[in-house]
Image (cartoon, rainbow, N blue to C red; front, side, top):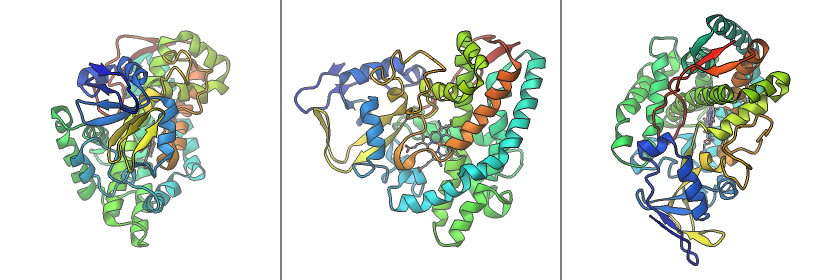
Length: 397
Ligand code: HEM
């Protein structure tokens, strides 16, 4: 049931946008919600939502009116647990904590791993070409983030490493609107926190890693211990699964659109644009929330002060008013203005690293593979925040 806009009143929708079924294919719902108005009140969740590109992007810059300080999750319990996370801060505090991230993830620092990334990507793809058929998530998209990014972050090389990926997905799900589906992820959150406080302690982190940079900032008195712990949690959550989702979704889109793979092979300079287009079509982070600090007018409707508002990157990226024929994957579209990495003060500090990983992998494929095709149906699990595949059978030649 929906109610159309009448003079200043935000239209309402009772769509169950965060039900497992809707999360498996949210795009028809996004299209309907975009059509309703600049903002929509989601009655099932007591949340407002902004779904149009023209309003999502400006809201991401406007931290004074769309604040992150009360957390970016969609339920109060998670926001309390995440207190001290960089995601849940506004300037000026955000600036101080963000310095530690920017220092670690600066392109000149990250570029030090370019050779490793390219060598590993080349070896990996040669092996996959020999095999012919493989799983695009486990055998392709996961390899570089697990081999290189977990090292960069500094997590000890123990047998719990790969579990971080599952805990992180659970932690994202725990950020969704309160309910059974969201609450079912609590054990993942607990295990991740247990790991961070007992196994990934400052003394056990790998030398020279991002983690050590973060804890050095505690010693200099720039950030608190709680902020450092939440920073490590942000690295664990944001740093690996998002990249895996982006790379595997792009591979899936290329496998289903052979003409687009042919275009990439003809012109490898199109690889950066192809990855951006993959992130536009299948945004790995679908949405985060903000809280309005005053009444906010968006065109003809007003979101009341103190409202929790979902900003939908996933919907903005498929907005037909911004991207003609938005559901089509076109490698030459080059959507440099996509909000897949966010925008404004919280824009993703890991963008250069994720992009380098993707370029290394798709570059290695373009050199060696003429055809990529689906070898079965991919599978996915619903998640309140992220969108990615669990398995992706593909064949290459
Ligand atoms: C394709 C891969 C990635 C995607 C799509 C992605 C997406 C995003 C988005 C949408 C935000 C904005 C959050 C907001 O608006 O509140 C964000 C922030 C963040 N990302 Fe990424 N990310 C990716 C890779 C990475 C990597 C590789 C790292 C670190 C190694 C990372 C670390 C972070 C952190 C720490 C933040 C919080 C920044 C802040 O609040 O100031 N991300 N990311």
